[in-house]
Structures are given as structure tokens and as C-alpha cells.
Amino acid sequence: MLKQYSFKSLTAADIEKLVARNTDATHTIQDTVLQIMDDVRLRGDRSLHEFALKFDKVTLEKLYLEKDDIEALAATITRDQQRALEIAFQNIHKFHSSQLRKERVVETMPGVACWREVRPIEKVGLYIPGGSAVLPSTLLMLGVPARIAGCKEIVVCSPPQHTGKINGFVAYCLQLLKIEKIYLVGGAQAVAAMAYGTENVPKVDKIFGPGNQFVTKAKSMVQSMVNVSIDMPAGPSEVLVVADHTAQPAFVAADLLAQAEHGPDSQAVLVATSASIIKRVNEELKKQLGVLPRAEIANMAIKNSYAVEVTDLHEALDFSNQYAPEHLILETDEWKSLLPRITNAGSVFLGHLTPESAGDYASGTNHTLPTSGYARSYSGVSVDSFVKKITFQHISPDGLRHIGSTVETLAELEGLHAHKNAISIRK
Image (cartoon, rainbow, N blue to C red; front, side, top):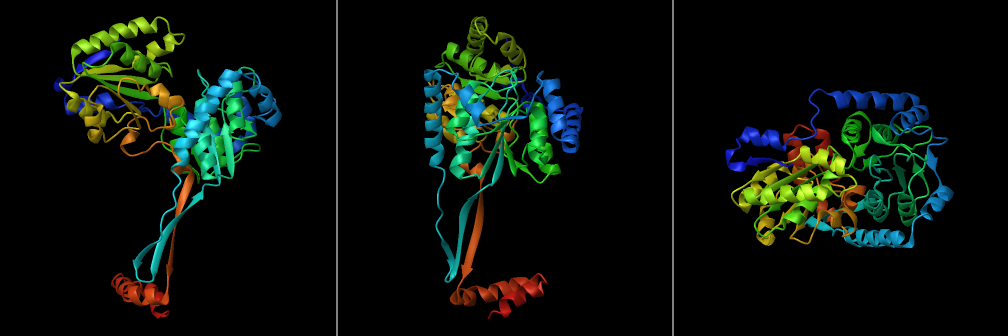
């Protein structure tokens, strides 16, 4: 079960080591990803077919599915399943729609007007993980804000299933999003294909989506090697649960396992105010693991996880902020008083009745979030992720009189006389 540490006995070096995850000290992942990226860049579609056979164990006749295939696959799921996806779509759309705001014009001096306007990123690439679990929810989390932002071209890549197609849930989400094509490409090779472009897969301006360590490494590499940006480093998923004496051990264990079942490289961390809470949660973990269909995967992740005993909730938040979790759950009656102390987290779940799975699927917030400590500097995906904000300014004759001498002086002190002249010649 969860390895146990005492916060008061941990040194700063111990904590730094404990909060580090998904490192690639020997560059093994980086070297593998670089080889894949070079292969895709040089051989295009041919390499994608070979990688599908190697990694996905499927021979593809073509690298994409179009509208007719998508419609047929979407029709295979039940009406109840369709309705659940529709509700998730509606909630995600409602929450993200509020993020588009027009900014006002600011007159910084009389006659000098400055403002910003939003423009969508024209071509975006969405990576939808496959692996051991297919995630239609991720397609909604990325596709909905892309549509709200007004992106002209949305390229979707996802690993093929053993049938050489996608499942009906992803297909139905494509219909909800009015996306009529999906590329059957997974892993680092999908990132490379969208970054470089191939005979079939279009080159995009920005790549979005979570993935394993290979996908995350590929995303971090393409933004330095190719003229393409990324949403954030979003690798193997993680959760940190803060629990005190008011927490239900069964709830805490369920939340930890909900994270652990994503994959063996996921991490679930418990920070508790007593050893007895950790003991009771470990008992619940054993009980609940026994009935999980993905128990083997979840158990591997739990072995990669741990618990920290702290003195109080303030100490718990101190550790959490150093860990900077993708998902932070506060299983305590005192969650309101803790909000101002949260400085580093991707998404926060408050109280005993707010499991992470609600945000993963249907509450409306986005589940594509920074991992591996990047919550210290990155936000989760939003409509802002899919737009650029361009600044504008206009200077009237009166404005030129007010600002002209200031610009002339500043240009002169920097020795940039052509800059000064651009003002002087107008005066």
C-alpha cells in the first residue's frame, strides 16, 4: 500500500526528491522520441503506418476516418451513453463560453488609445490519448474551447483501436463538435506529424492534449525544434488528497484509485493530519482494489505513490504547494479557510462530495492540466489557450503632442535616433 513519510522528519532535500516525478535523467525517453520525430519528418505517412503496426499492433489501410465512418461508429453507442456525452458537452460549453470577453479601450494619455482584440489560432492539433483507456472526455475538453475560440482548422489525432478504427464514444464526440475527420495516429509520432505535417496529416500552429511521458517529451521538444507551440506539459496524471479527521477514508481511497487507474506511471499522494487516517485509507485501498477491473494497473500506480503525515492542514498545504499537483482534493470541513493558501495546483476539488472524476467528465471545468510540478507556472486549458490577444493603438494629433517629447527623449537616451525621427517628422 502507500509508503508513509512524516513531514516533520523530511529535510528540504528529501521533499525535493519526493515531489520530483517523471524525470528522464538518462535521456532514454528523449533519445527515443527524437528518433521517432526524425523518422516522421523524413518519411511522413510511411513512418506513421509502420509505427501503427509496431506500437498499436494494427495494419492501417488509411491513416484517417471521415464523416461516413464516424457516423457509423457513433451509431453503435446507446442513447443513454449519447445523452451522458451531451450533458458533459453542454456543461463544458457553458463554463468555457464565459471566458470570451471583450476588453475596453484605454486612453493612456489624451489622444492615445490602446486596446487588445482576440483572434483565434487558425490551425490547432488535438491529441486524444488511447493506450489502455480511450478518453472521449479529453476530446470534449479540447474541442469545445477550440470551437468557442473560432479556430478555423481542428486536427484530431488518436491511436487506432485493434479494429483499425476508433470507438463509438469518440466518434459521437466528433459529431457533437462538428469535426468530420480524425487521424489514426498515436504517441510521439502523432505530435511529430502535427508539428511537421505529412502527406495526409496537416501541420498545425499549436498542439494540445495530455499523454504519456513520450507524448509529453515530444511536445516539449517540438516547440524548440519546429515553429509550433504547445498548451503545456501534460503528462502522466496525478492527484494529491489532503485529509483530516473529518474525511471519509472510503472516499479518500476511491479518489486515490480513480487517479491510479489511469496508468502505472500515474501518482496518487495522500497528505493526512494523522497516522490513523493513513492506516484506515490503506485498509480501504486494499478493499476497493480487489473489485476494480483495472486493479493491476491501479496497484502499480499505488506502488509509485505515497502518504505524508502532517501536523495540521496548514502544513498539508505547505507540502501540496511544493508538490504543485495537477489535481488537488481537500477532503476536510475546513476547505474554505484553506483557499487563500493554495498557490500551486491545476484544478481544485473542495469538500467531501466533490471527487476529481466530476471535473474529469462533466462539471464543466477543463481536465487538461499541467502535471509534474508545472502547475507552479502553467494554467489548465481554457478558451484563452486557443486564441492570441493582439494589441492595437491609435494616436490622434492631440495625442502626438502629448506623447511626442517623451518618446523623443527616451529614443535619444538609448541612442536610437531613427526612432526619435519617426516622432519628430510627424510633429
